[in-house]
Length: 277
Image (cartoon, rainbow, N blue to C red):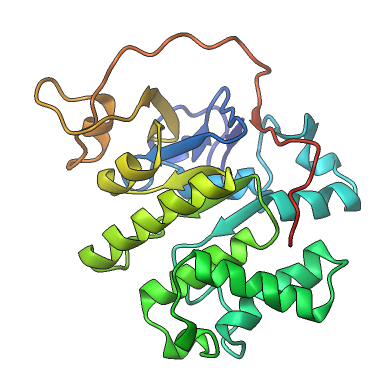
């Protein structure tokens, strides 16, 4: 799979005409927690856009349930929106400025899940806000009246409302103070354990990758340098991630070979849908 932005000369492998992203395969398995690290311009945001179908690859395919995204019918696209949810870097900017925290979480239950009464949607939204630790006093507030950390809790609850199988988070902690980051990372870990959802985490922060992910992919200049387990800080030689993010110190250990798969990026998800209530 590759993506080249307009104006870049085809065939170039380096320099300003090189593809923004060029990877032979990236397979995300159900329930997997995968971090993506790399310097600015490595292709991390382009990867997210391609996996979510927000941008079409210049070459190759992105598969969902074994089918290319550009061949999904309306029903499959609706299922994709339920089962793969994005949590953006700017949580506040991704929320409706005129809706309360409770309304933000209830809305996808009406639009993407369906079949629930208004009372059921409200009850489910309340459960999710409790699960992410948003104080009850904040439930009626609009985004402008919430802190950055509170907005992110709302964004996580909203993403969980559809029972997703995969959460895609693009630098979700970068705008938060250290205390808020640590609190929210603990919240994320607990929620992921309870929900059983997978995670694709884009981050410059090694602490976030170590707290939430079991493996990481290192991108550099649009290519995957390595895929390796994530471990605690350790002395000794720098891992591939250290070469791409100056403050990264994951332990580099031997990683067993995985079976060969189709030469395409894939987001495998189960056939069943999680219940919304």
